[in-house]
Length: 310
Ligand code: NAD
Ligand code: UD1
Image: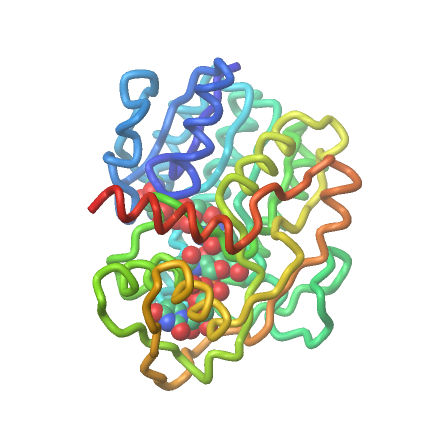
């Protein structure tokens, strides 16, 4: 198969690309390197077709979708607080960019588009765990953009003969997640602080919790979403179904790194949700997904990877 991965130089997209290549597929990547890095492709650079460019450029997306059987659409501005500060920019990338991908799929007769959606679509609905049948109640521009993208997918699936699958990732972590920006995912930042000896900052009281999911589990979900026929037109939570608070996370990390992780507490972030954990029964039942790496094991693997890198 020929597969286009948008955002393929990013954290999740590079792992999806690497797995696809390992399975013998031809992979093409479109990425503007805004948060992704070419070093993420280092282990398989000679086996991938890389194009630096923007998903806001509809003609370019269409050029790259040509002859593809499948698109993994991972490119996005991924930070919730960044979307709070720059809602117009994130609208353009996360909504218009997604329409460009869908239009390209339609024009080039790509069979299926798998979309990186987010748990942020659930917002502050107090009901837990989050189920796909709940009404979305996003509280950030990013959450609004991700549910809008998913709604557009549904329309393309119904109207234009493009099969679509939306994966609502919970909090993904693992090697290649960039810790260096103020908008980086919390585990990448905390591991970086643990190894450099710096003090981590917790926004809020640290009792907010997330369903952290190691990258290997997310790649597995993507492979299933790409090939299971019955997934067309569906959306699925991708998590582990277990909650970990930030304070618990720091405790785990302290044990793994054998040091006290005493944080500094600061004001909560605007647009933050407090509690997020997935019901993963739909994806288990319909796609046969089974998360294989638990949070603490994933954390251990990440710490080893970061230590080796240093
Ligand atoms: P990432 O920042 O590492 O990857 C995003 C990639 O998209 C980067 O390589 C970036 O350069 C690229 N990109 C951004 N804007 C672009 C544009 N306009 N044109 C072309 N490329 C562009 O982040 P990630 O964690 O790998 O996120 C991948 C996808 O998963 C995103 O859609 C994100 O919203 C979604 N997601 C991530 C998480 C998580 O916990 N990491 C959770 C839910 C959803
Ligand atoms: C993350 C993803 C988002 C995804 C969503 C799905 C990133 C950057 N964001 O958002 O793309 O759609 O999960 O659930 O990958 N925090 C600290 N200290 C820090 C950094 C963060 O206390 O140094 C806190 C935040 O305030 C928040 C929690 O940790 O309460 C998680 O933050 P973050 O990792 O940015 O993830 P989400 O906002 O949940």
